[in-house]
Length: 180
Length: 180
Image (tube, rainbow over the protein chains, first blue to last red):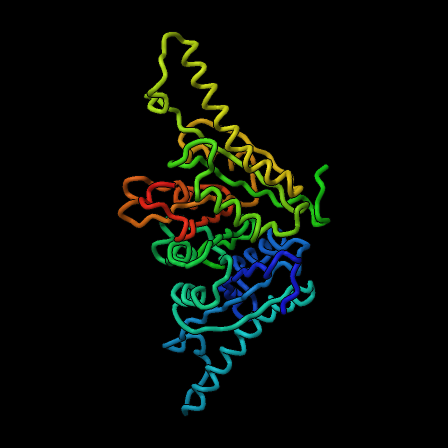
């Protein structure tokens, strides 16, 4: 039994989170943090028992190993350890969000999936059936969007639940808006 | 001073509402009611003092008077009375939402504007600066969308705040999905 505010099951909010493209793991991206902070301050507010948060982190399979340019691969075990390392990094990212919820007393779950973020987010929405999905967005212009694609736009169109897109604050944007 | 839940200013949620295309005024459309019910059950829940709702109803200027086919217009005063009548109908629509909030003890405001709904909603978002905008949607397929346009898609792209689109339940859809 979940604790609730007495108004039925808690509202299930899924938040898609990723790592900072500048600082790397375990730092959350600016847009993930914005989405999380918005969820806490504007939705959950003081109603901690009325919401349950679901943090999904999708890791893109690193097919060419660019993340590990400095490593030496001499055996299958080396590749296995690379995969382990990535998973651990992902867990440290999720730790940020789970710890924060724990401190506030908000029920939550967090997990990692591999694949194309936009496809995986939509298929996890089908499975978990949240009441809403919160995704951060870099708020790119049409020109930048063509090159980087946007997960948020795809989810708004294809996810099987209401989706809210949270843009970063202008004052938090890195020099290159494609960074996050 | 607003009453709040102690977590700063209440979260300002703007809800765009319109009349039923089948039953006419003062009945709210299915999608407006869905958007409102979702806002209450999934966002506000029991935290009545933590939210303030803003109901905006946009009336499309009825240039050819089709709504009043049975009326006789003999003087400028007749046209004035038609406009008055439309306004009163709009107020009765808003009454549904305001009464409901009042019963629950949720702070709210409601008002009518004239113009193109999608443009007016976005300009009112600029003025009121809500924390989020909730719009109902008929959930039309691409074929139907071409002919009726969708206010919700325009708002998702152009409104200056996070926007959440609530689709009608499948079991509430009228025979012709363009009706609402």
